[in-house]
Length: 68
Image (cartoon, rainbow, N blue to C red; front, side):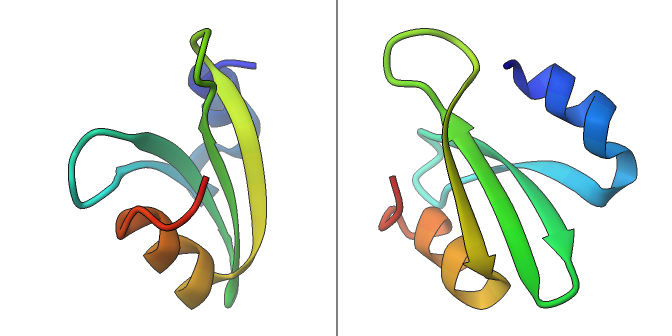
């Protein structure tokens, strides 16, 4: 699945974000205090990893380079 397809599905609820180093992009979808994070695939373009959990933990981990 591509990030564009995610955007079609989630619309305004999601946003494309980058990590602090600027070398990774993810699609973040907020549900109150929780999020779904879709990150890129290491070999091909598009989504390769999905993570869900508390927004403060999941988003901060990605931005600081601690999530997959």
